[in-house]
Length: 115
Image 1 (tube, rainbow, N blue to C red):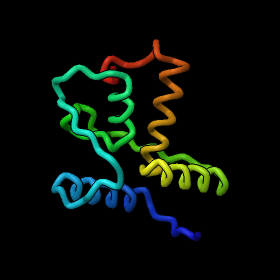
Image 2 (image 1 turned 45 degrees about the horizontal axis):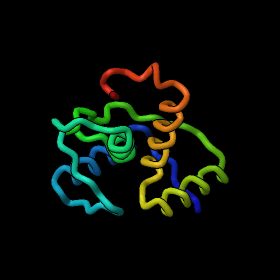
Image 3 (image 1 turned 180 degrees about the vertical axis):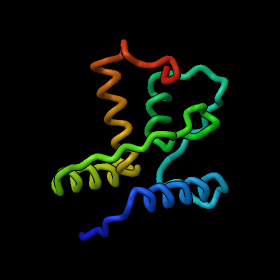
């Protein structure tokens, strides 16, 4: 599959458009969803589930950072196929993987905002 390269500005514009559509309720979930109360205590599984989806303002976790990373075609295909099998986006799979890695290897470095 060939993809066209776009500028960071175009990628950012598209991300904001998708976020606005989600906020207006114009997008439907691709997999099972759970609703969390912002005031309720959260266990590790609940926290991991939130980090897997696009962080939302009501969870006091707005997405303000965008990561750009390079990978091989094989790793991209592996991640993309795995994400589809898990009913999530590739971004959600990457956030879940980073969360699980950090939670296992460096739980002592977790910022208070992520607890």
